[in-house]
Amino acid sequence: PYVIVCNHQASLDLLGMVEVIPERCVPIAKKELLYMGTVGWACWLSGIIFIDRHRREAAIDVISQTARTMWRENVR
Image (tube, rainbow, N blue to C red; front, top):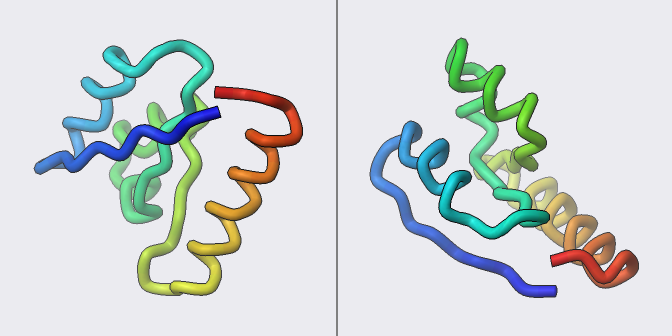
C-alpha cells in the first residue's frame, strides 16, 4: 500500500487528479467539497473519502481507519 499526496489549487483540480491517479487508489478530500453541488455529488459517487479539516480528531480518525483498511486488505 502507498499514499500519494497532491497539493491542488482549486476544488476542480481533484477531478483531474482522479484521472491521473492509478486504479484502486482512493482520494481523500476536504469535506467542504461534498457541499459543492454537482462537484460534491461526483466526488461522493466516485468514492472519495471526505475529512473534516476543522475537527482535527475526526480527520485523524478517518485517515487512520483508511490506513488500517489499506493494510488489512493490502489495497493500494
